[in-house]
Image 1 (tube, helix red, strand yellow):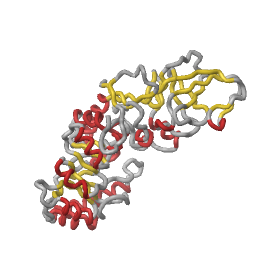
Image 2: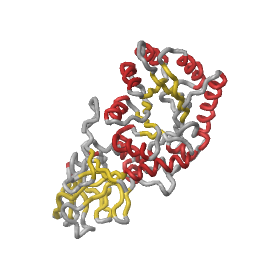
Image 3: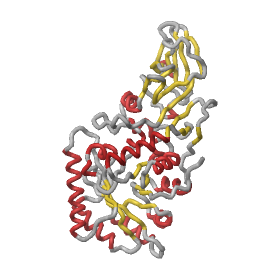
Image 4: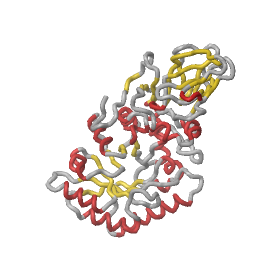
Length: 385
């Protein structure tokens, strides 16, 4: 199904993987329960972050699941993602957390999509675009308390907000910030950001105004900083059952929702001295059993040596360089391997588990990067368990 306006085609289906050579399995029940746990932990409404194709899990089906799990609002990074949700018939409140061009302002207002603002010129352009419109454009003001990215500086925030308040056709609905280091073992940076944000809120209240929706806590913030829950929490990675970091792990009852699978499509025994893959980055030492799987770097598997997979619940190592559409694995430890056998790249197989965190560490990156990098051409299958 084509999402909207040039967004990549994402194949979404319900469970029947028999004809597939590569696919994702996403447990919507796990996602719903994770949202419910986040609400219980925080005691606040959940604004579920579903940007980047719901962290690779599939924007539309995941958005439906988080709302069924009790989330009250969806957060995306770009207006095109919000539009895709509306085209899919999802009518929950949506916040676009990144910059949105003024050309989208009137459409955002008509679709009840809230935009983020942090620049005076953008605010003026929004106001100009909204002249003559019957409903105001809802805005959330972002405050840069220490991320060094998007946001008005704390010392300028109250003046910025109060100027917006008197601007016709604009409605200041929310105020938010983003933590740079909530997933770190050290707390000083985040505590400093909270203090700066609290000062902004106090300054606004002293001027006689408090936005109706103040939010700051990402997944790690929700778990570690209850004082930052404010009016709602804004978790992302935890919704999918993935750990914010090694220093801020999820409670044990959270459930990873995604499993990434492929199949053995070729099995052969190569003689000693045979090269495997491009540039022969692996040479067989003896007669070696090699299996090819239908997954490559075009699917999201990183082009690095040392990738692992699970076959029959046993860990096997990738051989040679990663190809665009295939990869090869050592099968000498699995004498009963057969064509068509399932191969797990992320997730559980029997008693064995290969986590997105472990895969990310082997790539020199994080679990976010692993799941967000899953290609659109990989079918997503949904089940409820």
